Length: 88
Image (cartoon, rainbow, N blue to C red; front, side, top):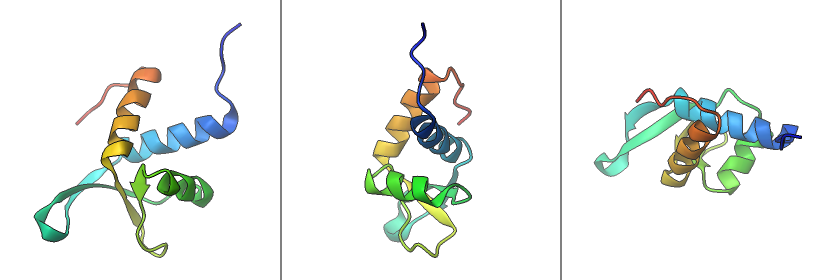
């Protein structure tokens, strides 16, 4: 029998992966580069990822989120878990 990931965990992991894989770079305040992604995903999942410091959504009205270093690390671990190549 295989260890299967439950649906809620899979949605959260795959949302993080999709945000990572569709990220774009934006010049932030103080000249720092930020990896950003659009917020076109389930808002409850986005809120949870924000609470866990994988992303920062700032204003809930913004259309994009910043992926934190912790989120980048998790995404790279998930790439390995799901056997997906990183394209950047």
